[in-house]
Length: 540
Ligand code: SF4
Image 1: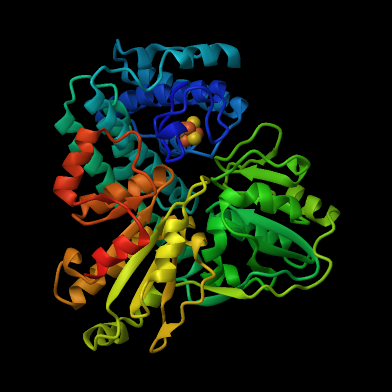
Image 2: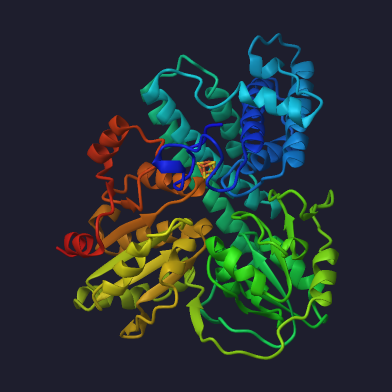
């Protein structure tokens, strides 16, 4: 196996024996084979479109299947077997309908009948299929960005928000990966195009979430417990949470969020449920430590899942694209609805919390509408010199120790700075009490990684208000990255021409040094150093 798609990759070079994330070589081979089949499907779909052959079902399948190959999403060989066979079935149907002859191996490979056979096929189709290291690096940068884009498009699609332009691009980009004639410049252009299309995907998801559940409003979220039965929801999907809240109404079960689900408390149509209580624990990388103590069932709606701690397997359920061998998976019905009965029954059979416990609270729910509603005051404070700088500190957080940089940076940020944050990177400092500047909280939680669109809209609105470009705003971006959704967001920021981004804790292994030089030259992208030195530079 060889995989280098996330920040925790082995020795900063690549996982070649087993994944640091827990991915075994057989699953790595199945993911490689699935991507290879999807590239063939991309070629067939591209040609099918020319003939007017468009299938929304197949489009949705494609983004969902690409999403399944993201870090910490699906570890279940049986689920990958189903996805590989389905990709081949869609591809073959398109081949029949178009009546064209195809010579590309990805268009002709028929999946083996067993998982073992598929694993052997997958071993022949790893990512290192070119000797050109620069092209490989740039192409995989685009592919990882595309994975993030597909995750956002999948979330939006479950809420009925889709645009053909995105699906068309996904198939074209997958097809392009099989085109050996593409040069480094072509791939640089395609990677930036991924960033552009990801902005559309995030906009679509923002419209899906706010259109369905309302605009987030600031809210104090309890970090403690309420006596009674309990269900913990992890991942990112709002619709799964909404369905679970409806199905648990009046059953005496309190619903808690974990990790990236925290911002869900800000959505009026979710918060209206009185049993949607609080946030339990911290972020995804602490699940092995935090889940065994949770006295109820746990539902994973999306990444990041890790190997369940011994004894908790029966309490944990997956849905959507998430999979772990042996865990019960709640599948969607054809109309998209889900029966969370098994999750609820498990929660009722478990002890729940014996007594109330107050552990304080955190403030969440600063989506773009909430922040921009006080834009006038914020501008006044900037002009009066009371706010010196905004710092967007966030991104996706990893499991490796030593990410205290972000905690320390926020703790050391001067009192005339505002910290905007989003994604699970915030759990490094989300409970710090930073106070306020004339009533504007110094720590504003914009939401999930999915809400990077909100952050972009805030930056664009401030630039308009100050009559300057985003790069001229008193704003610094200090981002942590872990998996492919962060790659997609970074490509979007580069597409928007945003410069001087500081990225850490380490730079992606798949970025070749020569390509990094281009990014440094063109976008002034820089690795983080120390909180002290970076703050000195940012505030100088
Ligand atoms: S997803 Fe990350 S940790 Fe897992 S195998 Fe790939 S590079 Fe390694």
